[in-house]
Length: 75
Image (tube, rainbow, N blue to C red; front, side, top):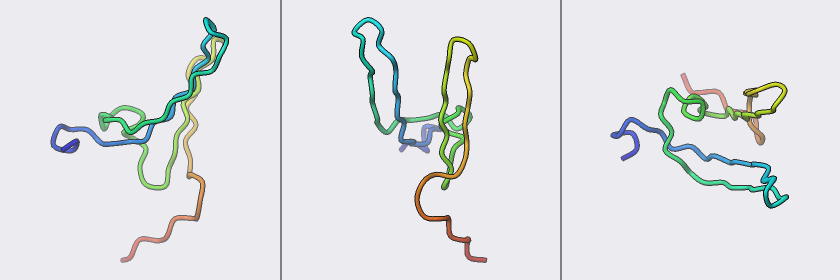
């Protein structure tokens, strides 16, 4: 159904500093991601982490995920 609407489903984790409550807000959920957006560009064994800081702005880290090495695709 997501594909029919032009989306892909990605597992997204969000961690935000909550200054008002002096806490950290942590969430994780499957989301519909447009294929051209950052989450939609990550596929297969790849993972991405988007960090944002006041002094540096957004930083995207992209690479192979944790776990077993990917198996070669059959020819």
